[in-house]
Length: 475
Image (cartoon, rainbow, N blue to C red; front, top):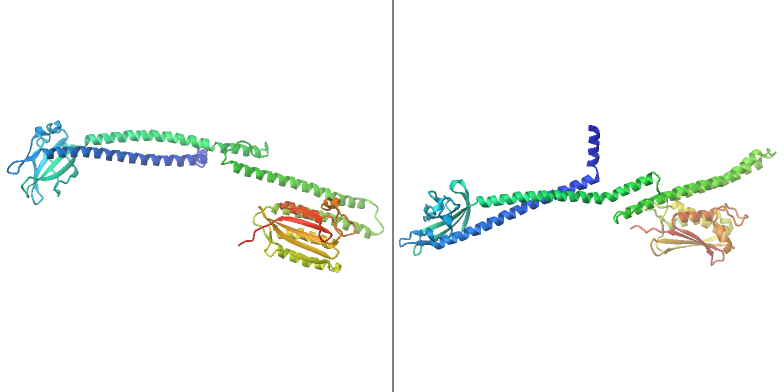
């Protein structure tokens, strides 16, 4: 049980839902704590300013009621002050007048409010300009915290005598109000955090629900209940679903193509195997040369079919790989040199017209050689004297290039052009060949997304147009 619980906790800690929820709750907690600190600080500062402003008014009142006699001694009529707390002992509101000597020292409590009773406020020596107000926090009667405001005044007609007027108020009520506000704020923010965490959990659960639908769809595909992902998905996930369905369709096409090729290969090999079987079952001829020739012929036929299907499978596997590019000019140059040697006895002139800018085929060099080699070989076989190869680039996206090979031979009629590209069909048995050349080119071009067209040539013979994907020249 303990091991299972640990495994379950580990699975939960690795889940996307847990991570999103943990990050969200952590962020909300930090935001709520910072908001609480800011709000509490703002409230404390506001209360402090209000309290200080009220105390300034009290100081102004005491200053206005301060009078000096003929000897320059201060006096304040307690009954002239409006707040009754001045008269109640230890009420929390106090005033005091200190004498200030020129050296900064003085005598505390020359005059004081009845609320101070028999005590006086002890303040440190403070250098004050006339009329300036300083603020302090000190311990007052019975140890209560006080906020103290002080200013200095002079008696009229005297230069040396300076008096310090002090007004103080108890901070306990203010501090209690601030603490109460902080407690209420903390409870409110805690409740808000709980609500936000619940909302975050709901948001994560609702947001990840499409992933659960995607998981069920994948399970249906894996268990062969369906062949593609089905259902309604959010707009953000739909491209992923479409791409995955495209991969499934591509895989299905590959499997179907493999089955078709296996069936075609089996069908193609059935004929030579039947011929060999009949030859083996027939009485042995007196001359073994005929049997050997028959065996060689059928083995060559079987080998051609096998080579053809292997080449087609290789191209099908690599046709859609990104980043492939083959320069056209070197391949054409090499093939022309080979054809000039192979068909040297026929005196065929092969001319090549390419663009000044380099052309690149978006595929493997071996496939390009296979396609152009078959086209040039066919053209040289049928040409009277001239074969012409041209290439150009088509605009648009994706970029394509067109390679045309034409000859001045007898050509092919419109009714026979469709048969000419069928595998194993030979229109003229007097010309050597296997009947696979144009069929190979057409299949390879189709695997690369291109096509093969047969047209009448300006030279009088056949013009074969090969359209293939083009690649850009790298910088």
